[in-house]
Image (cartoon, rainbow, N blue to C red; front, side):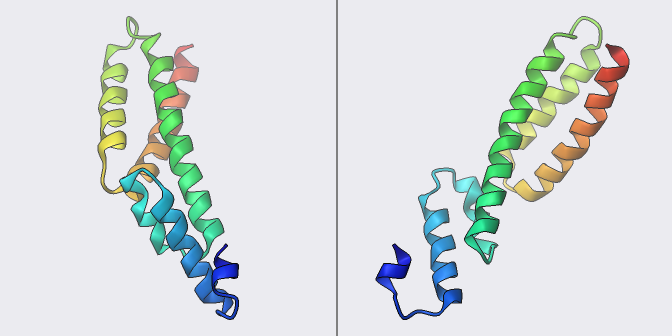
Length: 113
């Protein structure tokens, strides 16, 4: 649609307008940082990664709650981490911390299973 609205605009301008429109269309204000991406594909990939990690964090908590009798301390750590993930205003830092946390907890769960 942007191409139709601005048929003579350079490709860079079209891409910037596409990213801006994409970010404006998102309901989650936390994703407003996606505007820093230069292409629509980068912004979309980042948005999908954020959504996948949010869903994965819910799964991780459910998975660990099964072991609550055996490892109460781990459950507490997971719940605190989930809260900070879902309420963080610095999503990039939180995503990286979440990836590291998942690696550690997944390896611990493999050992305890």
